[in-house]
Length: 444
Figure (cartoon, helix red, strand yellow):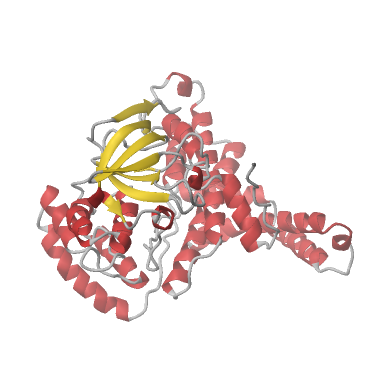
């Protein structure tokens, strides 16, 4: 493991520093080409290290050979001594869950706060970052996997923060147990990334609201029992203030769901058309006009996660393909080693974020760096997997999670959860201190 760490540093760190130093001089312009700035010292140091350590391609090949021989780096956090007291209690609690199976196990875990430990009791365990990491380790050791609520993982904290008692009693426990599946009806065709520009309207009627409009990119709309929906309840106020947040029974009359086929051939996305769909008053969350605030809800004590895997599924798939081949030439060994270096660099960056959280600091804009680099890495890895398959990739069925499917599906990663362009803006403005983009002006 130590040898692999050194090889990764030789392959990735020095080349990266050299490129950054060159870019720094270029961006600085004339001043960067003078002794008035220290940029030239960084360039000289990086170049010295490159010459001393030798060509980076050789280090990449060394990383590839070590990984093919089974060497892996295991990442972990050294937790404070009090974590062991927490661990004993958690381990004891989980023994009862391990004795169950199926739905009974999932229900037991949910009812004892393990579906989302970061949430406050009684829905979670009010777990701080250290306790969350201990819980994750003990769940893995006991081979226990709580419910993945998907969209419900966003809905539940919102209802805890803003829902009334009746809404919490009706929806929280079933969601945590996995008995309710949620979808999110926010995006609209004409609003783009401007959520406040939505036009779906909610008109007051006896006992509730009539919703008319169209939503798009709604994942799991055909499978969800319930949806969270934003609609405009007041057109006479600024657009951010006239939006309200509703809970929608997806079996309600007037809902027309039309699947949108993706490049993978699947149809997880949907268009949803709403024609005077009735939502009763008791399914409005908060007050009319609170929708924008609710849509932006975040809890101070958010989920903390740590992956102990420093390679990732894509690079492991590439290693399997390499091991199954008759042998790799230097070019492919260099490519493989480069991907493995990127994977481990990303894993260490994620570890740094976890350490910041455990030490009581809030994650900053570096999360955008992690997403930007992680997405680019995954896309490159699956492209390489397909390239190595050659013509076999052209005639494959593209079954879910095979290399071809993953290659196609990876294209969504730079769009979902904040596009590459958005991440670059965040990095430029919040980390590099560059001026903000000018605010768009409304016409008329």
